[in-house]
Image (cartoon, rainbow, N blue to C red; front, side, top):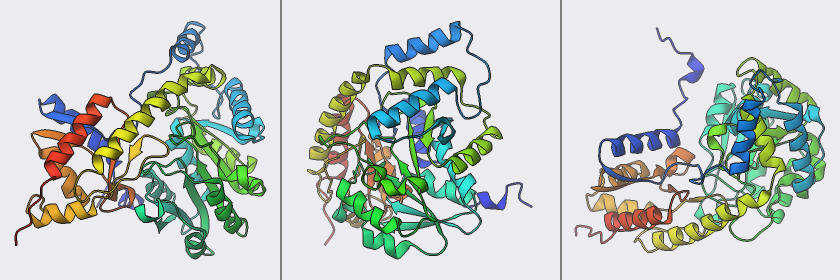
Length: 405
């Protein structure tokens, strides 16, 4: 008899963390590996944020806080939503959690009943399906690809909706594809969703500040304010302020749902770390120019990655428009490499294993982990030197393929 609950049988470890850990282990063993898997900025947390945390420790702010977050951090979040997104919330509509991942998990546990369907555009962030399944929900995928810029269409959304549909995630800018939904895109999706008030919209805005094409950030509520009562706006400090390890996510949404999410959280982590909350408050209320150098660096890195990958035979890569990922289509290259006997199966997993097995290795994440077989996620949240070397290594490993006659 298994000691593990049946609902966990379909749940797998997060592949992004697994690949990063494997690359770190190989590197520690002496292998020459350039890790391109981690989804975290390689910049340090800005000094003023660290100083706020140190001051909080010295002032003795080391006790429990309210489960849903400190009043002062909630106030800062409310001000941020108003200032940057034009959205009005009160403190009962705000929840602070232990990272954006816990926010999404709380949402699934609070919203989904057994058999409820969670609509997930693919490629997707790896944890969306698993969180839905842990809440006894059923993931329903809408497939996209490079041909449509990794963005779902209103027609696809309409076809995916059933009487059991309860939740949809919209992640823009996207992890893993870097795709950004335009105001027109969101308006069209909103026209569909307004006909289905039972469906809760989770707009995951974690990469809001990392726009690489000069566009202005918009989410679905900015173009469809009538969806306010059925939308939860998810965000956090991890990416914009290089605070991944601080573990602070937050959201704003309907009071009834936020209250339920806080109740779930009160029985899991109790409250987010007190020190991290004071650091997050400093991040949201401090000088926002600290974000600019990071975005400028990501923009330059993204250009180098795209140009390099597009020179590899059988690889197609769109220029990243947000976040810090490239998501190249390697399907043709995989076919060629398999036909030539270089990889043991015509899959993205075999390709990534092959790249990691090279004497000068590259660690990348298979697109199938994100619901997109034949693609690969490359994170350019690393130095320009590493990026150039990694692309050169991939080109060497994947280039000049001779297929037997």
